[in-house]
Image (cartoon, rainbow, N blue to C red; front, side, top):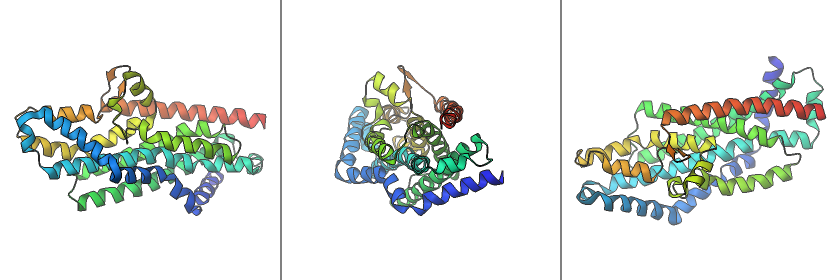
Length: 306
């Protein structure tokens, strides 16, 4: 256990010593923030106007403050969802660097068991990703609370951090399989560029996933990060939706908030069927377990070839 902890600590220190890697891992989230200020806010507001137009006279009961809080919360959710893809991937680049510099040969020559070696990479990356995304979530909640608040209870905040940890672990497990296919930093960096470009679309940061066809929605929801984003969206925006219901006084029996949930993807949709939040959580857990098993198997095969 001491050897495993030593390897884990070593991998943690390597990541946190490279501040440029941390910055670039958050680049997609920063891009979403810039795009939000340029035009994404207008896009989400247009979708809100569309929902309000369907609400008829109820639209007059919705305050601009609540609308602003809703759109701002969408921004935070989009930033968190993209970070839960790019940050875990960036944390795992240590694997490729060790392979490129032949450090993995030295590690493999030690009496440490193979599963402990690969698991030390996984634990270090999952911890690093949880810390970085946790800091991002804290900053987002504090800023939005100052600007008007999300109406979050202490239970909601706890669930949000739990979802972030779950997302960090599941994405790390998934990318562990992919990272073992790269032999050079150049190839992993090239893939990171593609991943950063696609992340915002897959988790619905730019366009709600519900706006895509059923086939594309199913494809997007194959990835655990999309389900985690939906879980975070339900947690962080619960208070805002309750404010909408309180404003309407139940006149529409929740039809307006129901339309918002449909438009802005509050439930994952796979093969044309809507999934409950509990089903999404189960999917994430199963996907993570399968990824961990595959991760150990792939590393064992790679180790034998070396």
